[in-house]
Amino acid sequence: MEIDSSLPEHIVRRDFIKKLAAASTAAWMTGEPRAIWGKTGESVTHPPAKADACILLWMAGGMAAPDTFDPKGYLPFEKGLEVKKMLSTFPAIQTSVDGIKICQGLENIAQVMDRGTLIRSAVQPDLGSILHSRHQYHWHTGYVPPQTVACPHIGAWMAKVLGPRNSVMPPFVNIGQRLEGVGESEELKAFTTAGFFGSEFGPMNLPYPEEAAQSVKPPKGMDAQRFANRDKLFRKLVDQSPNREIMSDYQQQSMLRSMDNAYRLLSAKERDAFDITLEPKESYAKYDTGRFGRGCLLARRLIEAGTRFVEVTTEYVPFFQWDTHKDGHSTVDKLHKEIDLPIAQLVRDLEAKGLLDRTLIVIASEFSRDALMEGKPGSTANDQTTFKVDTLTEMKHYGLHRHFTGGTSVVMFGGGVKKGHLYGETADERPLIATKNPVSVMDLHATIMTALGISPKTEFSIEGRPFYVTEDGKGKAVMDVFA
Image (cartoon, rainbow, N blue to C red; front, side, top):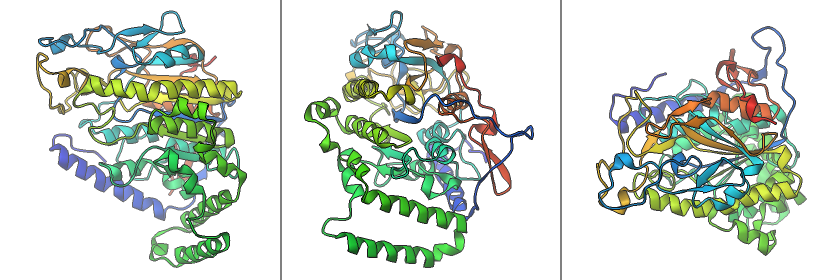
């Protein structure tokens, strides 16, 4: 199914939502997905796992690479500065690795760059009308939406293929993103799911990390017996629900198994991992930079307790956080303060606990940003910025306001990747496109899956058709990033 990018954006968005909703509804009716043989008739051989767990640190809204991990020429704000001369709005600083510089404001991350690999050449396709939700769906599932089936999130793939690390712990946890009461929530729900794999492989959503402990306790004032009785009644209601007619036996049983898993966690000692107030004060303070920082602390505790995949997001809300359509420099300066120390501390803590080598940390975003260009050279995407000025007159104009898909940074720590390694590069002058070793979303997914011991050719049969962990099984891991 195609989206007509020539239509006005609000109509494109509405059409997109309708098609996503249709695919999500269809997922309820699908039968059990089954692992099948590879295209050659031989079974898929999984690579040796370099990591047992993965943490995705999602910079939602479009993290500008020139203002974070790929600094270019820097000019400070001054009235009359020509926009075409504005590349980075932060100066470069040295990291712990000779030859690798990142932007001022990320001093703590700079100190741990010798533990990881910086990819500067990630690229995204031109999807016509550049909607954050479409690009985020593509990044999280590996498929360009809309699709005729509900595509599983990469965390759900790990949960399904690898199984739980600890049978008590949820294998997939999503931290920091509200899925109700925010803009584009329906689009976010479309990829924050296990899709056709079923509810048991879907995410446990924890929008507020400081409230996570309450999610693994019976409601206040309800004793264990009363809660058990309510659980039995709820199961009966599920079985007799009108949705029973449009939900396959597999999907219903998957929902009930997810309820079993949640119920088991309520009485397990591992539930303490959800309570970040149990963290020593000195350690807690290093993560207490905001909701994202506390989410990093929760992620570390969950990985320690046996969760397979955790996503921590700065949260996507239109025109908020990394969605810098105004006050770009000021907003990114604030975001530097929110992400810098928690990310570095997460790396240090996992290393100190002996977990970093077997945990892959990925810092990523749906695309980068530029001061002049929407999309990439040759793109026909509509320019969505409201700041169409040639010279700076106000501080709110100082920043990278347009969506740029031609060159994006991704950072990886642990999980078998090389230490202190730089892969790929982008041009030093506009357009800041990837000029060496471009990495597509498909190949980036293949790299992540390979680290976790999952073949990029892994496929399941759903409703009689093959469905792959990377589109058509064509993803190729970037082996040069691995030690």
